[in-house]
Length: 93
Image 1 (cartoon, rainbow, N blue to C red):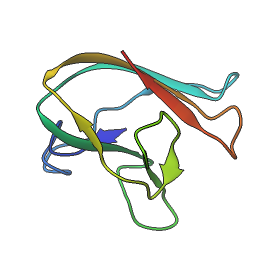
Image 2 (cartoon, rainbow, N blue to C red):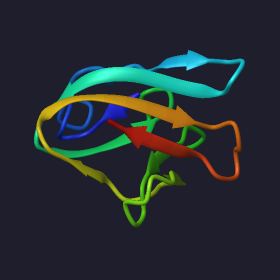
Image 3 (tube, rainbow, N blue to C red):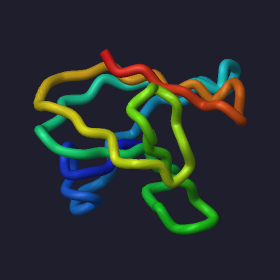
Image 4 (cartoon, rainbow, N blue to C red):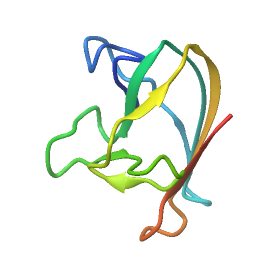
């Protein structure tokens, strides 16, 4: 799901859940965000064994435990692609 000051004040309310397609190993969702920061995380938790993903370098590549993703207020479509587990990516439109 999506967590952060741009969505739910870092977990004050439930994360925005992305839809998962198990056949393509892709997560998708459309969400309205605020000005702020966000990350993607599994099982509403950033603690091991669950994982959180950010983007070091703002290049569309997800890194486990990576940097927060900055966003401006608006409605966005996200696609997280884990079909190559060594190099997961995301797009934000």
